[in-house]
Amino acid sequence: MKYLCVEDFVVKVRSLQALGFVLIARPEYMLENDVGKVLEETLSSASDTRLKIQGLQNMFEYLLDAESQMGTDKDNENVAGYSVGAGKSVPVAAGAGDTNICGGIVQLYWDNILGRCLDFSEHVRQSALKIVEVVLRQGLVHPITCVPYLIALETDPLESNSKLAHHLLMNMNEKYPAFFESRLGDGLQMSFMFMQSICGSSENVDHKIQSKTSTSGKGKPEAGSLAQAKLGVSRIYKLIRGNRVSRNKFLSSIVRKFDNPRWNKLLIAFLIYCTEVLALLPFISPDEPLYLIYAINRVVQVRAGPLEANFKAWTSSISRHCTPHGNGMYQQGTDEPTVASQVMPLDLNGTFQQNVDLQPNMNDMRTLDLNGSNHQLTDYPLSYNGSSEANLHSVGYTDPFSFAKDDLEKVQADCLSAIALQLLLKLKRHLKIMYSLDDARCQAYSPTEQPKPGEVISRQNIAFNIGDSQFSLPTSPQELIQRYQEFKHALREDTVDYSHYTANIKRKRPTTTPRRVQVRKPVYVAGGYDNGDDDEDYTGGSATRKISFSGRRSSLKNSRQYGLM
Image 1 (tube, rainbow, N blue to C red):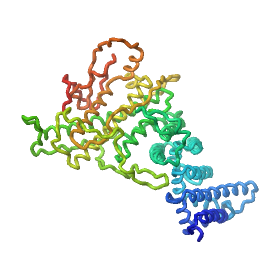
Image 2 (image 1 turned 180 degrees about the vertical axis):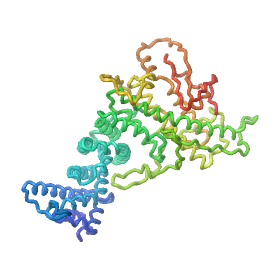
Image 3 (image 1 turned 45 degrees about the vertical axis):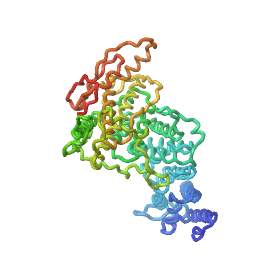
Image 4 (image 1 turned 180 degrees about the horizontal axis):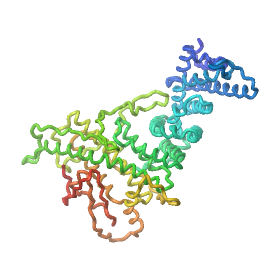
């Protein structure tokens, strides 16, 4: 033990290796405090990579020795034992302990072992994953504890790690399907954090994978780790695709992450990741994208109406505080109270929920440093496109006042909810175009009806495009107005049957003179649109549909201006 504290690193590694041989013969020593502190320090995130590998190797060799010893004892039918309870005998393992000691040792260091499964070093991850394989084979821990880590390892750039993780998940899905399904959402979140961490580590770049870059919806080549992550989630989906109940639970669990989530700095990036993953899932039957669209519609129908009402309250408050003068300048009005009332969110069961803390919560989505500890990312941007100043003259306002701190937090919370819905609507439009699903078919779908046997799906090779939407939070009334217009525009786009529109365009030959098409303006019912600024941009010969969120109808005005309700 004293040689483990010397400064000579070579001596320290050799001492740890020698300790491993001792612990194989006397495993009960691993339950003592002094040895336990040494092992925990060796498996900690701050430890040197060579020490972590040697510590994991010691544990791996102990488990293999215990497993082989048990097999030898059973074959010889000459098992030594000791009395437990009502005279039953527990086989002796490794010459000194028993199966209870073996399980207790593994459970004592299980969190440290799982933490090393997501280590920066691919060799450390490989050593830890081998231990997980042996532990699951011997049934020493509850299998549900390692499901999120195995899902994250499905996205490992090291092919041997991802294949072994996939193999273990396949076996677990066959034996414990309920456990597997219940942790899919946690696994998706952990895979995102794992991907974020390894993207910043040059040590684990797999050059072979990175050379096979794919193209994202923005037309930029994706990093190899990001493409690998999406492929890993697709492989997981294939495991449960054959069971309709399981795959629907998986899809709805991801969509629910867009429904009034708890916010933090990484949330926008995580929601974009979820959106891109859903867009790349390998659907093989019409029931799959139809159910996903159905789940998206449920969230939008519940959230869009109250959210638009909040935006109208904020913009009405802005307009009351901005009084025009003869010289065209605006000044802050009289002491009118700012409308800061928040519409309470409705859950899918129709019950009201209490307002959650609108402060960004950094404890939900903490980033793993892949050594088991959590840390904050420094100033991670909320915008993929960069923040842009709103065109003040386009909305008719200068900067008459700024939001109070409490009001700004509420405004930003509403804008974050709007971004989540905009991502869902973009995904919905992409699915309709890719799988040629018109509005009539989407509206006629019911998850309770059984799919028609032999029904085929048509798929077009279209890249998912996030677009140029602003994913930054507003800091001024003008930016709030701009975000409101973007949100209204996204809702208005959803009233157009894009699958019909795209199909018609593709079947036509290019003509020199474009035809004039009579446009029917869409009607949106959720407090209503009072403007039709962009309605004439959506043509294509297909009738627009009417969506009702609140049951009340209001018509579009004919004027082409953005009014503030």
